[in-house]
Image 1: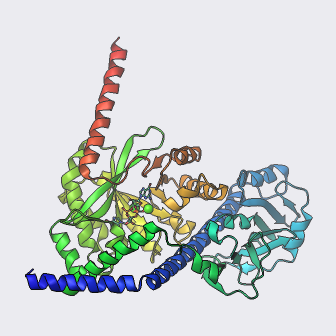
Image 2: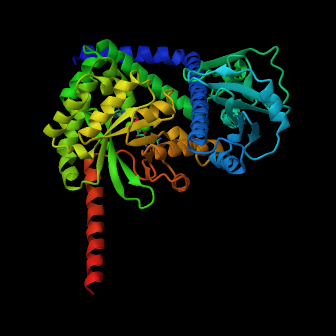
Length: 530
Ligand code: C2E
Ligand code: CA
Ligand code: CA
């Protein structure tokens, strides 16, 4: 840059920083407000996904009872029903209604529930024969799931759904929010309201709503707009310092933007060509033995000045601009050069990598991938393709056939972020994957509340039933490891073991383990010969 250009640049920086800091309070308020709204929208969506999961699980349990166990009110069949939801704190009771009479799983009568069922309005689901209805008696609210499996035969499961809303709101808003899960007939089957008396008549409320595409259920969250406006707004000296630094950063960025001749997309292209997009690898380990089972490849953009840009800052850009295939190829190429030999010699290690649902469904995906793997010296048996459940998988039949082709070619498939999307348990099952990766969102709650661990338990049970191995993601504490092991989950990934690291660190880890193995083997053979 010439001196004149430098001066102009500095002037722009000052000008933009001034603008930023001048609008500081306004920008801060607006930014936090929109961040808050985003958080609550996400929370609404996640809670709906949790509820769908609970219904999915109830549906599975009911069909299991009818298809594989008894269908009469004989005590052995009632025991089978009781067993189906033993230990669950969401599933409360099961009722069988047949031509020759009706019974509860473990009670003779339950008048309050029977009354509620008799007057229930049924909301049909997309699956024939299934309906949902709200149940209530003084002091209690829940959801009934009914499957009419014969002309006069029904099985009903009673879910205590209010627990799904327990402790889900941020502490600061618990006194100023209402949450409700409801059916299309307008009845509510779970709700949360503050313990204190709260009159909402003269209060302006901000509402977040979402409807399930999977079941006829909807969620609504109403928050006192004033409380929402205050949430996260207080400014500590540290925050002021951070915002001032941000202001300067913004100034530099904005000035750079004025001076830049290339667009961010051009930058990404250049980065791809120059090999600035690099693979990091996060170990996947055996939760009990703590042995290395493999690693997940995660993209990082390492700028020439050493700054590391996380994938969520550029993957969506690559995805929406047709660069994602190139990015995946570049990463696999580097992974092959760095870890191909390790994977060839240590066949128990797996290399997981991420693809988007669009990539997964693209024409020729499996053939191209197999050809690339061979070219980059990556053994097919080591490869695990992770496809996320967070986005809707548009063509589920096609997806299932892609999975089959990948498995036929010797690779494996993992469903990523299981339980966070709205694809439903049946779609998760239909995909036919080898692994089910449980999202950090569920793992976080596992040691905090019973409901979260129950949802993880449901996913684990589903996985076991369909022969999938569960991998828990985002494991950060020893307590979580203990809880996961209790649920029969064996594989994990998370900061408690290692953050994503460059290939050299993985090579060192694998070498250390190989040496320990050799030593143990040596000791074993010495013992044998002694
Ligand atoms: P993901 O596939 O769910 O990857 C796991 C993310 O969780 C990673 O974030 C990882 O660093 C983070 N993580 C793992 N353990 C912990 C933990 O104990 N605590 C916390 N707080 N976080 C943990 P990362 O690397 O930022 O990647 C974000 C997402 O970007 C990935 O989520 C994946 O969906 C996407 N992604 C990354 N690389 C690629 C890629 O090459 N292609 C595609 N299509 N997507 C990619
Ligand atoms: Ca992943
Ligand atoms: Ca994930």
